[in-house]
Length: 231
Image (cartoon, rainbow, N blue to C red; front, side, top):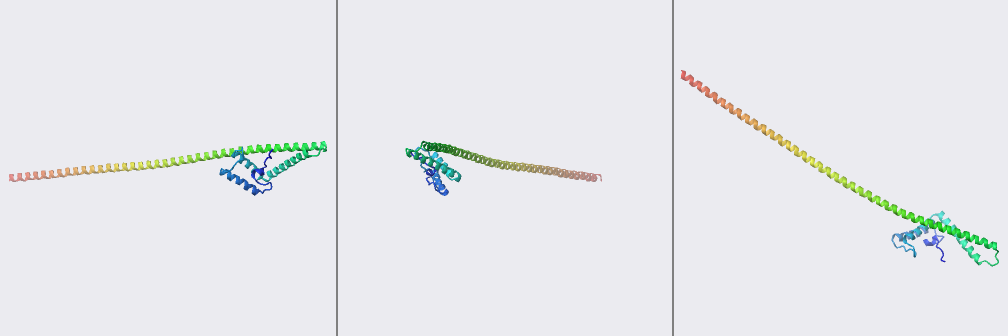
């Protein structure tokens, strides 16, 4: 049976690698993942493989988690060594000693499988968190797009309202100018009519005055003629 890879094997670093080396290794995998050049192991999807890499990095990049992981690995190694010693032990080993070794192996195996179960649970949780983060990012992008569309609509509406106000103001000014021109035309027509009426009255008065003068001249002539005839 093939040995299960450790988190160090997954990130392709040694167990004694420094924090910077581990970080650089994960960044190298991340860059390949973003460039779509990351090749997952056989039977493993690209997203799942990257989740495994992320899980390994999150464990080894935190000193406390890395220390706990190394301790579990050392215990598993010790348990496997004890198992090997048990099967290679001389036939004269006491039953009690063998029982102690078997109990140790079983305890180590139980701890190993519990650790593996915890790791699988944590990996599932990380995958779920990654999917949740993707959905939240999509929701944020959708919200931003909706806000931008609303802002554009508001700007368009404001521009249209401004244009409408400008058109209304222009129409109002045109109407005022037209009304003022009509008022002036009416005022001019009224003055022209008054001037015409005044001229007509003046002409009538002048004509009447001349008629009166002619009548007076005729009356004076008649009087003079009558006086000459009397004498």
